[in-house]
Length: 415
Image 1 (cartoon, rainbow, N blue to C red):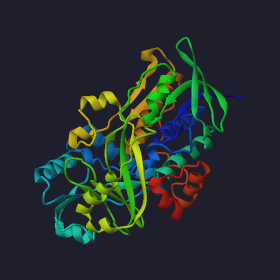
Image 2 (image 1 turned 90 degrees about the vertical axis):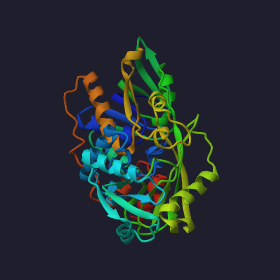
Image 3 (image 1 turned 180 degrees about the vertical axis):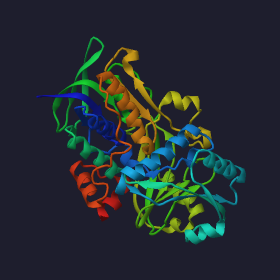
């Protein structure tokens, strides 16, 4: 059978689901397809931080401003897809105070609320915080529950007449005279798709999908480990206030916290080393901020792969195991119009962060709408996600789209 649609979005993570929703809200007939359940790639295997922009402030003004703007939007439209925890950047005795001061000044310049508190005040707010914490910066970080976020976006696609296909791996494209004329989806979907326009939103796998259309998208995926441990009532996200490095973030959930993360360049986003030494390092490094986690029971461990764009990483000298600039911290996103390479109805979106998924989707959808002659504007900055006010309804969406993922498995299971 053949399925006809205006736009086929390949990739059912946050960005792909966000693009499909954006287009559906503009009245475009859109089909979203993923090779597994939704959020089964990078999105659902992240550490789940909704950035305030503070992490990037001293090094990347554009990224910092994007993060605080999207942070504020998602707090309004995403409801119980977000946990409003707040965040602390903590300076330990061995950390450079000038780095703290530079980050603080940048936050204030870019509109990121930042308050300095003493080490004693930080310990009063976070019992168990290390005695070595000299001061802390309070910022509006939060937590994202990615399986809920993706599933809510997908539900809105279908509410606006679109189609969502799970277990629909892309097998091939048919091309003729500089256009994709068809896509073959295997798995349970087992369908040929006739689409006017095709969007590649497959993240770390974008190069493999682009190759099927005869174009090159050079990716530089990096893996990172996350460890969820039994630890109740942390409160705010904890960030180590130093050059970004391994084991410098702790993300709170209800009765657990997530320790993260590492950064290692990998050749294949489906097959890469998962060393116990990386797990051990999370306990060692995160324990410098919050010593009790060193003895906490491990609940689950997972790795994720970041969808980094190689030309951008090369420009900044990113490398495995690096810190600061060598870690590729800014992670900008790129919308690649493949008309420039001779495939006129094909676009890829790569890079970026979970926090900026909606903005990535908006810019991609703007391009696609322009190509299709659609004049309707983006509405996702104001339109509240379905189920946003009801955790139980969000969890029903997660089940319906097979979107349950390790990042927020405990939160979705508990409600």
